[in-house]
Image (cartoon, rainbow, N blue to C red; front, side):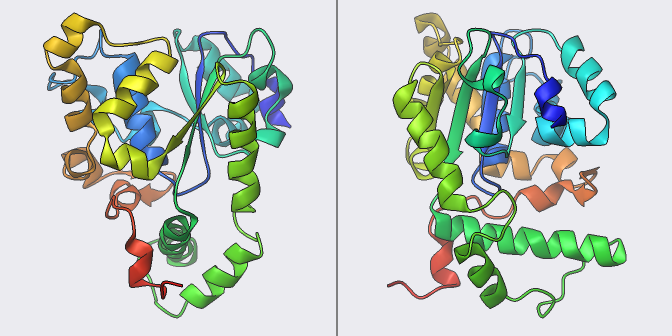
Length: 264
């Protein structure tokens, strides 16, 4: 309900995703692309070299959950274009954030649900460890994969069911393609340059021929690569949402589910 207080701007970019579907990567890429003029990707002072992507792009619902008044003040103070994020299903977004004239653009990223499940399971164990002991020391029998699998298939997980979440944004992208861009994690892995080019264009920040010739697009892809982000000092230490920054960088690949489930 508090998110309904949010005042959108036509220049806003809202990054939407089901948890553990490539959110951290998308935040980094979108932030770097939108702010490349004031923060060149090669700069040693680039925000992504000193802050976790989740600190550069805030979740709407998390901020409003802490304090509706403070969150509103923070978002109002942000200069346009604002890059924000949400894990909320499309059906729960306020109408003025989706299809009204003042609404900005929405970028959704989806991922193979089997990989999402594995990533959610491992992340949930870290969260449970912190909640239980204050440290991210995981115990294998605290939350088994079998339990996670059953709950996921029943739709009993954060922001679930997963298939409803994906379908909601997919349908919106088909109805309003100029308002909602639907990306796939696996395709982003296969062709990061092409997909970042498409992402930037959709956000109204397309790369010029001169920028591409200067290698700016490739520099952003390299700055935001899984390897680069994971190995930055800021992501080897520090915390966000009471979790170690390193918790948001596991392996950054597609198909890891085969190490935990038997292919059909």
